Image 1 (tube, one colour):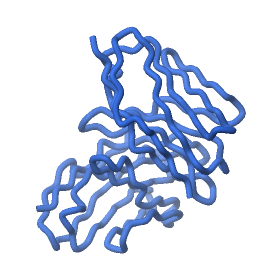
Image 2 (cartoon, one colour):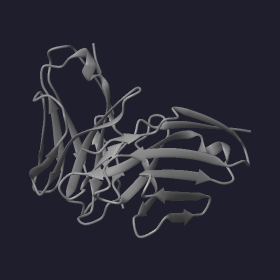
Image 3 (cartoon, chains in turn blue, green):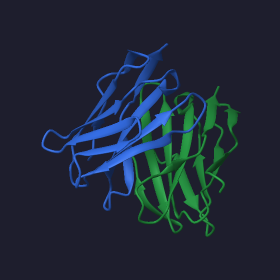
Image 4 (tube, chains in turn orange, purple):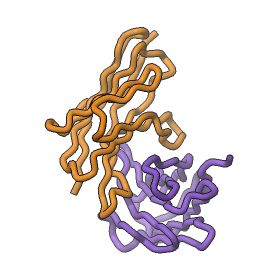
Length: 113
Length: 112
């Protein structure tokens, strides 16, 4: 079974600085991972993904790094903005075809102006 | 195009009752998954449906059930509600073969 850990329940960062959110997983059978962002009273919104053919994927201010040997991924937000304040979930696949996801408990990011 | 639609948005039920939640996926998406979110627990996978068949199931008791219709719309049912069932229930749809899932806004269920 897949397990996903996000060991920092919360993170506070000054506006303009880098935010780094970490995630660890246990099962590397399917090497693709997703990050979602969630605002209160809304459903999670897909943010960025990464697959095993890469160790880095960049989309604007968001970059995800994958360390397959350590079973670790991280999300970098540079520069951080107050609108980035939300809960961030890391998700890893499981199931016979990797068709459903196990989510971490989330990290609440607060970007301070 | 329209996103994933969940109804109702909010629901209050008493212990022992049953409840049915509805999810309409994005047009063309055949996979529908359900998740439960409670404070401090993140998103817990309930089950996934594809072409009217349950493909995967999480570790929830049999009181939690679901189904999918031929138009890919899905319903989730919880019978004999308990206080601990109070949560945000999220539905997510995916296009066949894609990994990215799109979530609805969720149904906030409160059991009193």
